[in-house]
Image (cartoon, rainbow, N blue to C red; front, side, top):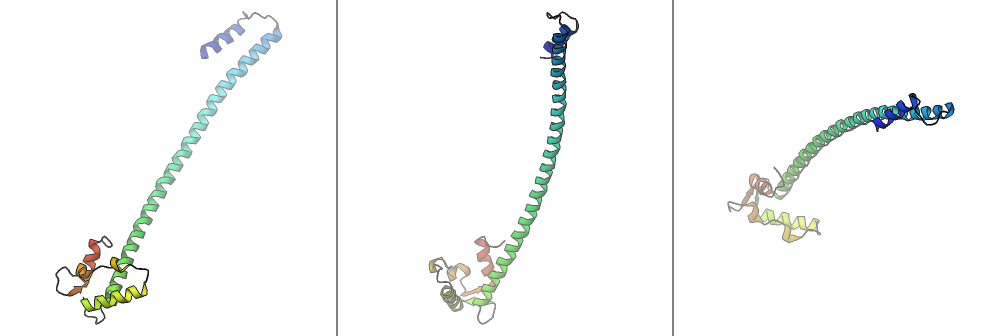
Amino acid sequence: MRNSIQRLTILLLTSHFSCRSPFWKNVALGSASWFLGAKFHSRRAVKKSSKTAALQQQKLYERYVQDVSTLKTQNMQLQEYIQATTVQQLADEFRQADTNQDNKVSRLEFEQYKRQYLKMHPEADPSMFPRFEDFDPDHNGMVTFTEHEDYYRKQGMIA
């Protein structure tokens, strides 16, 4: 394409153009100049817009990285909050079940708590409620707070 434009320009300037009229020479020369000028101008415009687009893309990427980092931080904080809340809720449940406050839950206390819980939450399925034996791995008839936490740790509810 460039070679054809150069040949056309040389042809016009050396007066080997078939039409000897100055009007047509001027029209041809003006058209060639306009075409060449548009080519150079469009090339500059494309470079400028490409540079602007690259800067905008870089800014967007930096913003994306910053937003992802912020979301990761917020996600970790939320997980820590959920973990702390779950541990607190499970500790409260243990204390509610331990009616004589000896830091151990007997089978009787467990069954009383289970009945009370199911009475307060009629939508709960009784078969989904853990068995006393699930909490008492040493089968001594008492569930300590550590055994209670270990059960929920095995279930993946606390870390």
